[in-house]
Structures are given as structure tokens and as C-alpha cells.
Image (cartoon, rainbow, N blue to C red):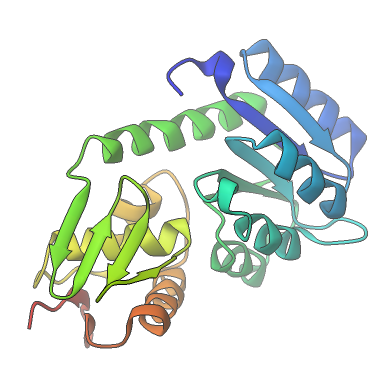
Length: 229
């Protein structure tokens, strides 16, 4: 993934003008680009193209971006694909819904191509830093392997979406340390991505549903910690 020319981007949007300007600017920057005009087609193209980044509109005919994102995240080969939502909607629930289904970033229209390029680059920079960290943590009865994005609990393999995995990995890497929601947002989503604090609570709840309630403890009025006991 070192060279930008090898990075594949899929644009899923029902507005031809937006597709045209984004495609033009991405190709000019050296990205390989495919497009789709609705969510149904977007899932089909993504399953074959296997993009590294998907730019996904929320409001589309046939199938909206939230449902499309859920389907994309269910495709194993796209587990590590970055999904950036594009929307003209400013309502809080749209943003919460986007991150709840596994979005990595959220950009409102009108989209400034230069700003979009910076956001894409920032995602890959953060990923590169994470890849240089320790890849496997064995703590209590969990083996958390960042190299393969898998979790083994007492011999049983558990699959988590990317952001849920990163949240668990970060807390387990720093056991018995309490982190506020803001600190978790900065470390998992990045300082340059605006995410509501509620998103952390939703992801914590989903992790607990899959591995149990005994690992991540809520420290009332402060935040969360991974409990060693």
C-alpha cells in the first residue's frame, strides 16, 4: 500500500457532477478509481474491485448509505477498507448512524477535493503508525492479534468490525488505565475526524455483546478501562 498509485478508491454517489469532480481529482492524484451511482451497485462493484477506500453518499435511491455500509462491512475482504461518508445532511443522527455502521470518517457537502485528499492521506498515516505497533496482545483469556484483526477467546475466534477491534486493542494495550471518551475518540478515530462522544458508548456496547461484560469497565463520570482482574 506504499504507493498512492496502488490505492483503489470507489465512489458511490447518485449525483453525476460529484462523481465526475471527485473521480477527476483522485485520478489526478494517482489513485485507481471506480464508481457506482447507487448503493446496490456499489456493493456489487466493491466485492469485485476490493477498494482500499470507499466514498459513500448517505442519501441515495434504491438503498441508502447506511444500509450499504452494513453490507460492505459484512464482506470479509473489505474488513480493513476505509469508508468515508459523504452527505449534505447536518443532523446529528446521520453522523451517529454513519459511525455506528462502521464509517471511518464523515464529510459534509459541498466537498472540497483538496480537503478530501488530506482526509484520505490522514487515514493511511494513522494506519501506518498502528501497523508499527506490537501486533499481538495476550491478556486474560483473550488473544488480540492486530496483524490479522482477529480475537481468540478460549479457543473460539471472534470477529469484530475494524473500529470495535481497534477500541478493544487500544484498551487492552493499556490495561487498568482509564480513558475518557474524548481520549478514545482521539486515539481511535483521530483528532482530525469529528465524532460524537456517543459513538464510543455504542462501540463499547457492541464489543461487550461479543466478548462479554467482564473486560471493559465503565468508570462513572470518567470513561472506560480494560480490567485485568
